[in-house]
Image 1 (cartoon, rainbow, N blue to C red):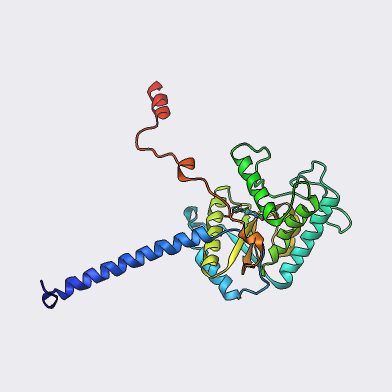
Image 2: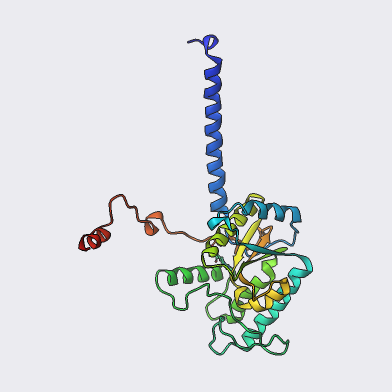
Length: 286
Ligand SMILES: Cc1cc2nc3c(=O)[nH]c(=O)nc-3n(C[C@H](O)[C@H](O)[C@H](O)COP(=O)(O)O)c2cc1C
């Protein structure tokens, strides 16, 4: 069939299909890029983020799934003086915890019940984010990650003061103009933590798509009893689950070049197309 004889309807369909294919491919590329490009940023520019942008990010992030669509997440957005106050108070408590370590030496132990300025603050995380006993392969990965980061920062083994300062940088949100605090109602169960994690990942990707970067922060947890009243959250009703920095990355800061590896698919995946032998053996015993 010559071009002059071609069927316009079928030509349009072919063109629409190829436009559709190109769009679909582009969407895959964009999404894969966002997921791969997100990484934890630990140095931010002081440039502020418009409130409308933060609101947009939170609105799209709330498309995250949650069991029975209960949408358990609650977010406190800290900017300006509110951020500064939380930051200063926690830095002060963090310094005190170094001067007066908790008896057990762990950040999760309750050292005191007083919040007075002259005595060490209580250090008790609302939930244990990490195990108290580490096993492989997690221990090695954790060590590699920690030393990889310190290496970027030029911190050597035994340089405790420098390590303290780096840990403390968490409490100024690494210089980010926006700090997020995530809480869950104490009336909920552990399942809601999955939902919150999905919501948080959506925030990080939506931020990345808008030229912003993030760092999720469990570092705040031992200071929950300091943070919660300062953000107006009732500890008896809500639990602090995580913090997060949000802002424009400082591209000059070498700490932001710290990129982390991931295991290949075969190391964490079991492909099952036949009944698993063990299950089969157990079932045949019954
Ligand atoms: C829930 C959660 C809490 C985290 N807490 C901290 C933190 O307190 N301080 C910090 O510097 N990084 C923190 N991180 C960042 C991790 O160290 C980081 O995600 C991990 O090393 C992988 O690197 P990537 O985020 O750059 O891909 C946290 C990550 C998650 C998911």
